[in-house]
Image (tube, rainbow, N blue to C red; front, side, top):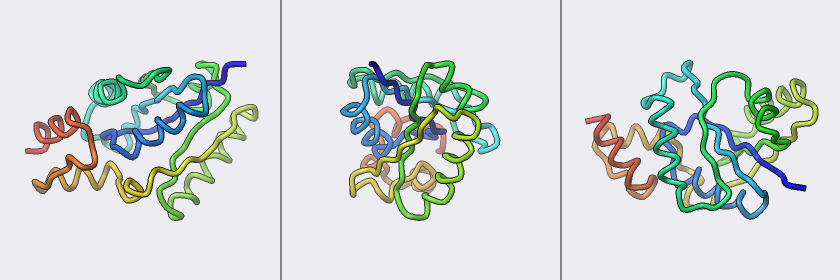
Length: 159
């Protein structure tokens, strides 16, 4: 039986922490679907199309990984994709409460959909998209946190 996992997020922008989670998921699942959420309530720096393009380029060397954008309920999207598992990354204990609530709500909306959590490698445990954006906005070096294409996009957008 082939198992597809959906790794959802805003990915504004995709970081090495996200990439690390995708690499780990590749070893566990037949197909990894990176689902870039439109999420206009977060007022993302990059459009959905830009975030999808950055993620596709960043993850291009990974087998059995697909990047798609979506808008709407995650539980519905996962079902439409034939996925039975959601993947969420946990950087710190502070992430757990919110993620626990999301997992419970998704279980209510789609009882056959399971949520699993992975932690990134230690060197990425403190990396978040919002911190990367802030560092870039203030003229700092983000090359340790994002791929070259993302770094260039941040420089172009936030100068």
